[in-house]
Length: 349
Image (cartoon, rainbow, N blue to C red; front, side, top):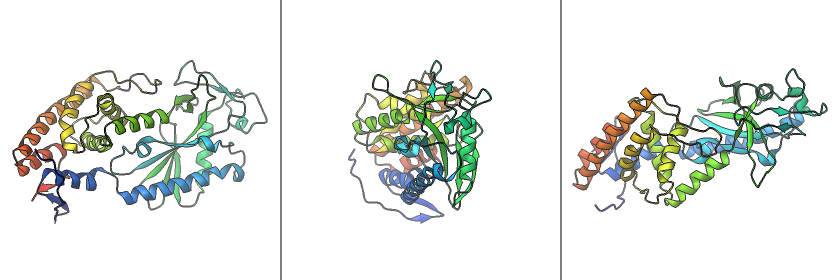
């Protein structure tokens, strides 16, 4: 097959795009249904920068606000990794605090205790009843109460898992997930972040590992992987099966390409193999690349069956769509892709 990128030929009909080739159909699909709107991305990054500046000023304007270690602040999540699909609904940020002599134990990576002995430290305001163990919930509440009066932000609340502060904006579709954290001292050339664990203590985290892993595998596949990840996330979000967690799905795809270099610039050429891989990988152990959480795959057996069955079916359909395209039956191929992705995939015409 001659995979020459053809010029975009499109018309609007009842609010949906139309295409005469599979290539133009996928280009339209990625641009209008899968990938984030570039203007939204630009605006969200500006909002993120403005918010970071405002929060960094709280330690001098809010009584007993924890001292910040701003050099260690980082962005995390799929927006930072560039794997987020439409819609843009949240932007994730770590705000690092000065430890001021606090120490930690790491017997359990998901249940870490932070201990403070210096009663003159600002962090002493956030200790539990024992006056020495730092409460992550108290620090989250301090962030929440301090953020409610920031201009342009509609509301602040702590999420149900008691791990982040959700900050909603005025006249924007996206919110911010604010995570207070600490950065450990390097040992053997490595360190990690400590974030709220939902029960008042702390747990290990390191978004740098996820981001660097995504960058590395994407680069070894000539920069073609991100569109595939976002497209499969769109597929995962459809109400045709149980929806698995986005982070789990992302790692299943990254695992597949970790030792490969053949991810195509044409998304449709990569999809049959990915669907086939998901159909079996969903039953398997999926290791946390950071080594903190163990198995990321906590799906029930019934959920695994649902996802595997759909992936197997769409593997067959994707193979058929590819065959029709090689036979120059673009209408038949596009219609087959619409069976997989639904009405947001362009129609033929």
